[in-house]
Image (tube, rainbow, N blue to C red):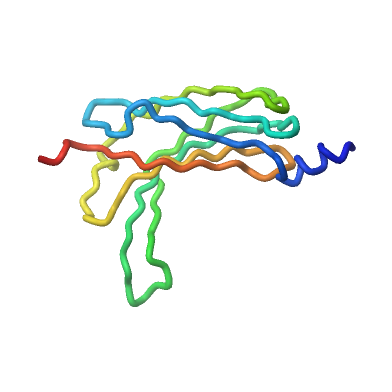
Length: 139
């Protein structure tokens, strides 16, 4: 194994992910569309699959908990990815998620997060998070 491949296998100089959402504010009836950009970094990266999660994140301090944020996955999509991303290459993967009633936020301190996780074989998974909104625009 070459030294560069070894560094890549432990996540140094490894895959980077950037998710670009076409419309970060969605209204009822619209679909969440976007593109995932995978940058190969300094070594070839074999990808097992890509996971997209829409998460309801609520900031709420409670006496019975040590955590200030609570996450609930409200939509999940897994995408097969055949192959690998070569060193210094960028690969694009498009996605589409259809919202449902769980995307409506009733808590004043809640927000929606789109979390992208790229599962890399024998390496460190790459992640990206973006804030999205759903519903009617506030007047």
